[in-house]
Amino acid sequence: MTTRLREMLHDTAAQVPAYQVEQRALATARRTRRRRATAVAAALVLVVFGGFVLPVTGTPPVDPAGSAGPGALPDRIGLPPLGSLHATDRPRTGPASVIFTGEAGRLTYDDECSLVTVVDGDTDTYRIVRSGWEMTAGTDVVLSPQGRWIAHDPQRGDPRVEIIDLVTGATRQLRSDVPGTVGTEPAGWSPDGESLVVRDSVPTHPDRSDHRRLLSLVRLNDGSSVRLAEAPSGTVPGVVVAFAPDGDRLAWQTGRVVTVARRDGSVIASFPLAPGTDLAGKGAWTPDGRWLSVARRDETGWTLRRIEPATGRDLGALGTAGVDDVVGIQLLGWTATGVPWVVSYLPHPPDSPDFTRPFPNDDRPEYGLIGSIEVLSLPPDGQPPTTLLTAPRQVVSIDIAEEVIRAGHTRVADPPRGVGGRFWIWTTVIVLAVSAIAAYRRREQLTLWWENRRVRRSGVAW
Amino acid sequence: MSQTFHEFVVHRSPALSRTAYLLTGDHQLAEDLLQSALARTYRHWRRIRDGDPEAYVRRAMYHQQVSWWRRRRFTERLEADPAPGRASHPDPSDATTLRMTLAAALRQLTPRQRAVVVLRFYEDLTEAQVAAALGCSVGTVKRHGHDALVRLRAVAPELVDRAPQRSAR
Image 1 (tube, each protein chain N blue to C red):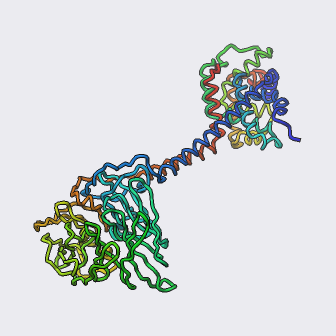
Image 2: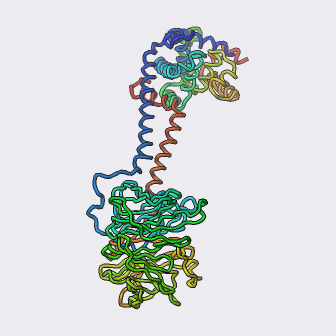
Image 3: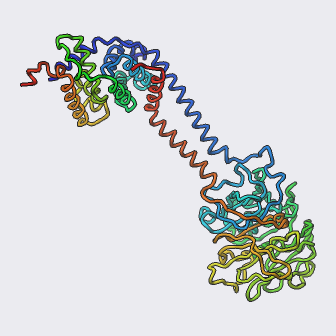
């Protein structure tokens, strides 16, 4: 039945000349190779640029916040978006107003390591910093008074402090000169931002079952350090460190003892605290530098009192209202008009506060009891506290730049939502990579499509 | 000893050109098809030169022919060409007329049907070999072959059945 068809096919084929297409085929093949190589190179450039160059640190040609003011305190903070940019990523934010840490999912990674959230001084731009373990803002990750630098311990087991410059994105590794130290963490900044108080842990047994702790003041310009204190096993020196406004003196609490010293390490005074009181916080010095503040817990809440820095003698209450029904308070600083700003730690769970347990020396306040925080303004005339900042649950620590406090400005905030910049960067990279792989696997079809398109555009008659 | 790409093209271009023409029914398209297939072959010449490069070229032509963008081009062409079944019946004794009839009838087939016809009745491949060349199942080859013959019989019975009387019988 198909014999005729076979004959006609062969008969028709016999009339077909041999097409002279060799040179055109070679040209097509070479052109395809060039295009493929170009496409591969372009994809690689995109991947490299998108995935690695954009987030990398470097010094921008222009200081993005060189002329910015001290910033303002946001009236609320939120959890950082998933995939937030890091503090060293471009674009830089400039000096921060606030840093905070917590236990929420987006504030931790690897179960026990903290993502420190950095809030820009004037906007609701958030950045994050990966710390080497669980961190509490204001205690072992500290924001400089100007809001420009963050000091933290970036890696467990590596005795160094990393200082991040939020303006340039540059990082500086500050290594301790304490012999045998196995851990170095920051404790507080001097008012000029040129010195940093650090704590070192030196094992006293080969198996590192016990440590002695040292407190030092490190000058950042030349790296020299001054030993301030050494504490025996089980006691943390400088769990609270407070510089006087002039920066010449500082006070710190070790156990139940407060020590006042000069920057050269010479001790001015050392005295025990009254029961139920603690050095109030990094803003413990009154604005005139004459007195120290302590926080005292009574039956319902916490009040601020003044003590004499030379003797520790109680000088009476500050005259501010008490803060009730909270786990604890820390005095962060004073406005230019003399109003103290404190962070209050809300209990967790909210309906069963436990105010009777004393704080362990190395955990003040005890963060396991904290459900959230608020920043309060305590008017000196005894008026009720004014809530300046609220935070979502599981935010348990906060540090505020002292210049922001001194300026006393707050702003209405709208914390970022959705996903952050790194999410989009990596999504783009992954999409490009998958597209490149798909294009490579289907390269023959793409080549044919391209050739077909070229032929059509060349005007082949139909 | 391995032959060069140039030697291969010189020796095999006539046969490949014939297949390309039967697949496309148009000299311009056939040149285009062969050129693309040879370009693809050249890019992989090192790998295939010691095997069966001609089979590689043919497979490349078949696949390109049945790929979607070429189907679209043929669809456009089908819409532009008058159906031979509606034209006047040619004289079967005239070989030239028969070739024209064949060309017009093949244009009524889909590219895959056409490829099956060429592979089965010009290359004389078995259905299994056709399936391997086109990358489909034997059942698919059978279906396309059957559909192609049905259509050819409808539009140009003189190509499939030599005498109308035999068909009537």
